[in-house]
Image 1 (tube, rainbow, N blue to C red):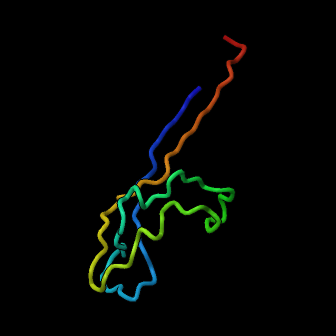
Image 2: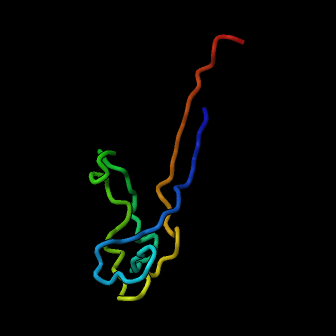
Image 3: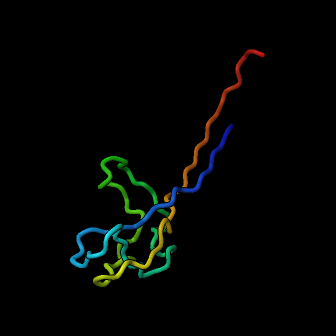
Length: 97
């Protein structure tokens, strides 16, 4: 048996639709809670992998807010990690040598 355990890839949180977007570059929101509190505890993908709109959210949207005008958001780059990846593979022994 081979088992692969891997942490999730880092990602950025960004936003769209704010009337206060005046700075160039990526728009990052303000984080109102800790990073652990921003992630949904005991998260699962849910019944539907596709379409992505039917997936369970990985982050609590209430943990973020638009920054004030002309100010960048407070989280850094790649401060969140995606869900971990686990894989098990089994190999049946062959009858040969």
